[in-house]
Length: 309
Length: 258
Image (cartoon, rainbow over all chains, first blue to last red; front, side):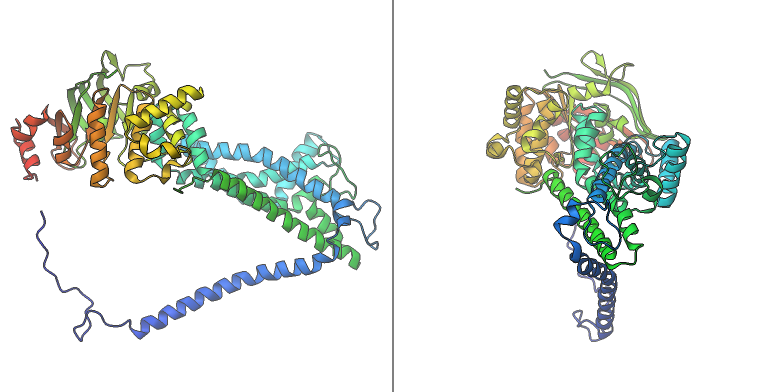
């Protein structure tokens, strides 16, 4: 039972006695100023992006032909026209696929441990710290590690292999996916876990069938970002897959091509034919990442928690 | 189906905080027992000790005995997951699983526990939705997401989900506090219907609701902030609301509290 409150004279009344004074001009100016700053910052951020896209598309279109997707560089010298990146596209797809297969399960399970089981424990804190450290590893160090450990110490395919490259890439992917998954799992409301427990569902089933599906869209986005990041990595691949102009389908045996190393190789020649190939390689790499992103979005939409009536 | 709950000497803690102190009571089968009392007095905590949901919170623990007919829920070797299958729970805010359809929400408890036969599931889903007075409203859109229903419908969906696993007892933690009066009425009608089959315990801040739906009422109170919650008295609802034994109960019910 509350009594009807007396209308108290509120603060901020203008001197003229009206509480509905128009917006002061100083506030209008500040509003405009901040708006201008925000738009300017947005323009500044978008300029490099548009410029990169424009350069890559205009320069890359010259060699974006069927040959580029059908032929390798085997027997093609820098001076020759023709040739293509078939070997490099195959290599990149295989290496990134293997890296994803290795890193995603490990990373998602790590995140599940950190959020669902270990929360606050000493082990979880330690793991969390090392994930942060891993995020900061320069990519060439990951390549050096695989070179030193896998190829030189264990002597597995020391002549270079796509798999060694995938190992280096998976080291780079893991921390990104762990962080992204962790953030998404944190967003799943505790209510849902409790609702599931209250139905007599054990914890692991709750995680598999309630928590992970709810977070799936975000986890997929995180994985795609990680894939996009490692797809353009060059340094670790130079140390692990080495270099070849020929098609090699087998990622476990002998050097393999990849788009970043293809671009790096073509740019190092002064001839225009070679430079054209490099630009087209860059364009194809961007298109590939875009396609994968679209694909992931479609998959994510399929699983999205729908709110429609 | 319905079972009697007998609680004796129950204490609950959150880490070092003593949340409820030495509660003993008997909850009769096939009846509705309402818990009333001011916020923070331990009603919800006590409710959650009745299906071992209290211990889901890190650092939380319980001392004392809760007997479900002749089984002690806190005896060593008792699986909390099994306890929760026989003591279901409905929460304050409707919380259907967002990734699942209406059908899958109701079937969730069964599916996640390994029931896969389509015919059996169909039958239980329909039965539970009818039991929750929701069947007629959703029968044409069972495949649509549960999150698309109105708040009141979502809460009845959650009740259907809880009764689909055929528990002995149904605990309700302020099930109507997020709902409008019409939806509240629908839930109260449902409670009256469900008490033929289940033992129902409901926490509510709405005393009229306690008076309307319950057979017995328990009043909880705290001596002050930081002190543990205590059971002041439990009796037939008609007696609590007309002629309570304790002065504190009368003060609370008549609004002279505090």
